[in-house]
Length: 587
Image (cartoon, rainbow, N blue to C red):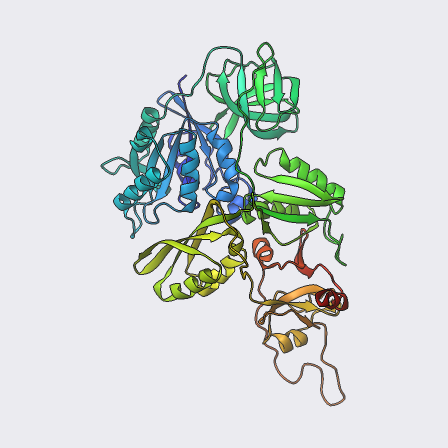
């Protein structure tokens, strides 16, 4: 059977997963009717509407098997993109016909071009009122020239599409995706494969409760059969193993087969000890393929066991040893993550961005882990700091305040388009973006669009003010009362509500000024013989600001920690005692 291996790449929310849904349905690859965004099976993917993990599926079209890899669009999950591209021989580049190329479009396209892959460009969402497909097509061409595409890559086929309706066409609108499938068969080359002893590069890992570790990769040479003995070639040596079961993809299912097809994407079960980047080879010819390499991390944070007065109340796994075991497990599949134990049970996590690390922390908390994390910081390389390419879009009347905020954070504008809305590109130090998203949404009244991707390393930009407010810190333990919160709400935007239990040193809100403010939120109104408590006036409280995990990470100052449990997110000072904190500041 002929095979085509293709990845779908795009910026966040340009319609990759929706298009894959339509391809599966029209190729009749689903055994039963499924909902929308079928491949976004992870809870966090469904909640956030983004793809986090690269996933494999396959359809049969006109007798040809098309393996499809759905990839993340966010640069923080670039490790997933790089793994996916090692499996395929071509890419579908989706671009929103109204928004045009965005920062993550640049990121994923650069990776595809570096891998020598030729794209098929799909101008999606052409039914939008503000769609400008011909202009966007020119922008894509210009971007490819800028990224150093070859003559062959620049001679790319393109289609117009409405992925949500399952329609794509070259010239005249059609009601199905047949022309898209035809373009894949015509322009994506069959997988490179040669006769000889078996060879496969592990690009992904899974786990079966019955068969153990499952290694996923594309067959580069030869064939493998179920029950066959193989060698796992690691960086530091080799292991012998036996293929307990062999699977290929069909629709959303894995189908067991006796022997692999040339160039197919397969899953080999029972290979304990296999890691991403290892080569699985025949015993008679143990030759390793080049290891999978991913870009270096740019952001780090410190993770420790929770030491607050409320430690151990809500989590199932609370010790440093449990955290170490969980992080070691994550390293097996998360190739862009690095973990170092910098002190006993103190771990430095290094990742591709705040979101990359925040997704890991959110996953761990949902699994029952409890821990504390410190302020994220950027990683310097040879004295140079990482810079991001930032794209902002905002209403004209609000753009001035955005420019002013970015100017104070040492951002340099490189491009601007003015219409009813202003779209501008900036090169900005990565650390300047910590805490910027919430400020940006405030400055634009929630109408702004912001996205960014890694741009490169540059000279250190100097001091950058990333937070202009202080913290309101509890000075007494107890339960917060409406009376206390009402007294303080002119000076403090609270993160808590009446009835919340607090401890000394816990951050309960944001002080409107730059300095920290010690507050007592546990004072109740005293009952007298003249009137009852609460009889004076109706207490009207401003609703508290509920922080997500990413927002809480952005809020952190250098002397603060975020306490993460399965049920709660609490901000706190590293030094809880207010007298001791003042003494340290005095020094």
